[in-house]
Image (cartoon, rainbow, N blue to C red; front, side, top):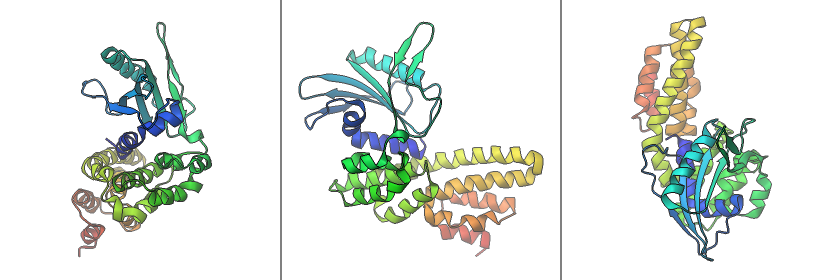
Length: 303
């Protein structure tokens, strides 16, 4: 999983009742039971979130949710697959929906081919008014504020409201961590600032631990692959050596942010000045096990 996948899972786990009520109109109340259904079917991906909702008045809903950082043209068909599988298993009235975090001109709320027409609820988070969500005071929705319309303006207040909220401590640190991660979709600088500001309590977060244990390795590998691919492409024009250097720098930048947040990113100007590809490789290799940014500085300064 990427850090955004992890953040989405944590947000849905902590706030699914509020999300269902606010965005999908399901009458979730204090007496509602939200039962997370198993996701063991091998063909199902990890991003779907199936729930069996029991309301106080005896209604039951099968709900399949997706929280997507960017639009995938195959998403409607994939969501239909999820819905069909869970519908067969549970035979309940079913609702499927997507919360889309980043703008896309291609996003649609249906799938259609020569035999099938399927519609689902598509919530474009980026079109929601951040000020309105702040005014509503629904704490669980605050991690999404930076992604909303005029969200960067209200991000610091969302962070403050979460920090000062009466949420149980475990929930609070998770929500602050999710807010910082989601902010990275619109502003790396804001994300780094939020991590630096709350790192003392974020280290207690389940989401933070998942990122360290699962997200870091995948993020480094993805960053290396994407960075090297970009570097090799540029290298056709600039030479193989410079291309590899560019790819390594891309991978190191991703790793520094995931591993150490703002403290790690402060090393970037120094590392960018390094011309020796072998030394950059050594920095990237040590980044996976380093416990502090100073350990990396010692490598390229030969301290």
